[in-house]
Length: 160
Image (tube, rainbow, N blue to C red):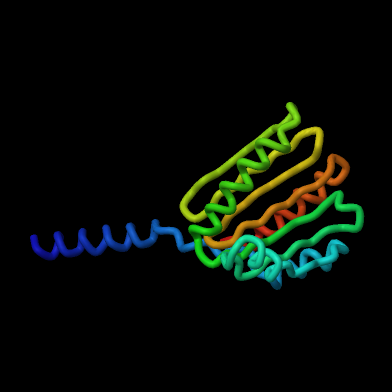
């Protein structure tokens, strides 16, 4: 009887541990720069500027744009998860307020350590995503929506 109880306990423990997900890995600076280079973007490290303006919450700020600013993406590696969540929430509120052109189709997810919101309207495509302590933002005008979605997929391809 004791052997059955012990065996049952071991089996339950294995099943519980097998069902637990590992923490997602957010995109890093190397991936960000590779995606930018492959797509002809200019990349600017604006970490010092953000820390001077907003406080020392940023470990790394990378901004990638094309010359006419019709397409771009940004990465904010924050000092901790809480700072990234706050940045995400503030940017999401701004996105909803300023990008809602009456034709926005929005989807969102919010699961442990990961938040995502995408909007697709007549003014273009916008995506915010937070994975742990990193937030990234992808945007485009209406002519470059497919390119923006491709960049988002490439950034997300590293999360896992």
